[in-house]
Amino acid sequence: MTTVAKTSNSLNGASVGIPPRHIDFNFPQSIPTYFYAGNATATTFFAMLSGFFPPGERYFMDSVRHFRSHVTDKAQRAAVSGFMGQEAIHGREHDRLNELLAERGFDMGTPDRFVKLGLKVLEMLPPSTKLAATTFMEHFTALLAEQLLEDKDFQGLADPEMIKIWQWHALEELEHKSVAYDVYELVGNRHSERVAAAAASLVVLLPMLGVTWAWMLARDGKLGNIRDNAKGLNMLFGRKGFVSKILPRLPEFTQRHFHPGNHDTRHLEQTWRERLFAEGGELFDVYKNRVA
Image (cartoon, rainbow, N blue to C red):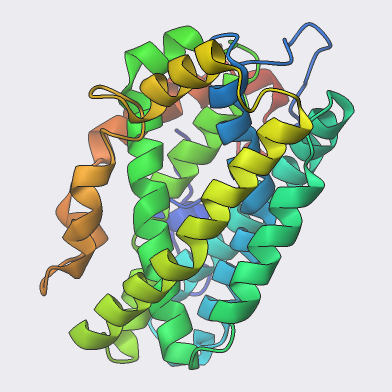
């Protein structure tokens, strides 16, 4: 990873390890429609997540932006700038991916509509509670990211071209996983509010997730395909399923002394920075704003 020199007057996201990377992703026509293990049920789950991401990223940015004036430390302000930049690019690139998925026949309008409806409900929360909800959802995305980068089974089953956007996104989720929480600490970090925000997020978003997934499968004619549904559910929620490995750590957020940095992922991040962005790395040639 390129190191950018720090100066007392000029700090940016890259200088504090949170560089907004402009990646020109290629989505070749050779990518199969069901890009995860050839399974419609599991693939649709990830397509749904991709549909959720752009509105979700904007909600996260808005909730942090509301309290940006509270951030006076230069390094923390740079981290917030890096967070904003990374999240904005995530939304842009997943919008591009969602266009491709729609062309392949996925009903990408449904996750967009449903997540916006859920986020509209969460918008009614007080600003500090909205930020607390963001920190909970950032906790979930960090767990998802860590699992994605560590799970060899997932990497072996996913299409090698399609997985690149998920690996880039996952790395950056880990790089900025503490930013929203650190801003929340500046405005109070009340344990009771944090727990309430997590509960509100789950009550609003979990039913929406289940309905959206089922609706997308129905539109694709795959809901009720017992063999495909059973295989996909097992890959995601079985005893060794991709999501099942994440769920036991979700309650960490409710611990009184929780902080995203308590779980150290720096070695994992460095491994993937080198794998993706070092000279000869998998995304080196499409990384458009490398710092020389």
